[in-house]
Amino acid sequence: MNIEGNKVIVNKSQKETFEFLSDLKNFEQLMPASIQKFEVDGDSFIFGLKGMPEIRLVLKDAIEYFNITLGAASSKLDFQLVANITEINDTSSEVQLEFNGKFNAMMAMMVKRPLNSFIETLTDNLQKI
Image (cartoon, rainbow, N blue to C red):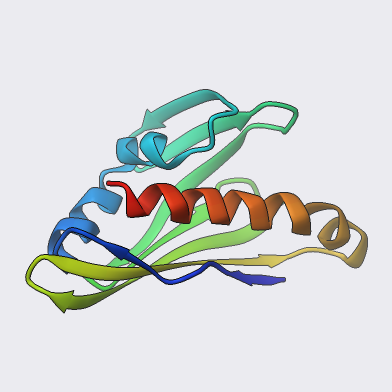
């Protein structure tokens, strides 16, 4: 299952945007208002949204200034959240979030709508940083 968020303009250079997203504690600013838990632990963070199970994301890969990949820490859920960062000019960049997950058909059907909403919220909040 793949979900591509909208491309958004961030009023930070490509390097500044990359550095913001590389600092995992900054993801708390991007989370939906329904967040009930957010804790950073080294190269991972755990978050919980109202009515949803807690999820731990681990920093899996980073290509300096271009891409950051977070993945699920649990082998029960196989997915990645990828931020692709493109330079526009010295003071702005374009970011697109992608969710890539391997779910069975029933699970995909259940999580597609909440995941779309989650990616949309992260994207909207990213524009405001």
